[in-house]
Length: 258
Image 1: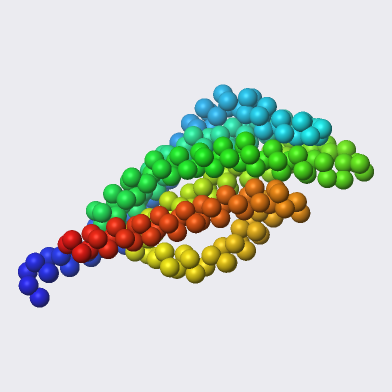
Image 2 (image 1 turned 180 degrees about the horizontal axis):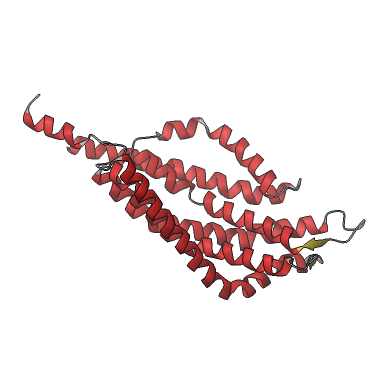
C-alpha cells in the first residue's frame, strides 16, 4: 500500500470516544446534561409567559365540541399551568438540546459527518416545530371533536384539566418527534448506516407501526382521525426514503470523485 492510500485509510479511522478517555467523556456528558437542564428551566420560565394563551388554544377544541374542562383537585390548576409551561419549555429548548447532543457526539464523527449533522440541526428544530404546529392546529382539533361527541347522548364529556392536557401534550411532543423522521433517515443514509433499500423493505412494518401508534396517540376507532396521524407520518417516511436515495447518490458521486 502506497503512502497516499495509507494516509487516506488513516483518515477514515474513527474512535467511538474520539480522543478523550472514558472519564473525560463522562465528565463531558455531565456538563452538557447540566446545560440542557438549564436550557429546559429557562425555556420553562419563558413558556410560563405564554402558558395562558397556550391553554386557551389547547382547550378551545374541547370547548367547541361542548366538553367542559374542570379542575377536580386543589392542586390541579397550578400543576396544569406548570405542565403546559414545561411543554412549551421543551419546544423552546429543542435547538439547544439538539446542539449539545451533536457536540457530545462530535469527537466520534468524521469531518464530513460533522458537517451533515451540524447543517441538520436547524432543519431538525424547524421540523419539530412543524410537527408541534400540525398537532395543535390539525390533528388535535379533529381528534378531540370526535372523542367529545362519542356517546355524548349517554353522558356529558367533562374532562379533568390534568388528564386532558397530558393527552394533548403527548400528542404534541410525539408529533414533533415524528416530523424529524425524514431528516434522521437522510443522515443515516448519508453516514452509510442504513440504505434506502432497507428503508423501503420495512415499509409494511412501518405502516403497521404507524397504525398502532395512531391508535395509541389518538385512541379512537374513527378512520378519519387515525388517518390524520398515519397519513402525514407515511408521507414523511416516503419523503425520508427519497432523501435517503439522494444522500446515497451524492455519497456515491463523492466516492467516485475521490
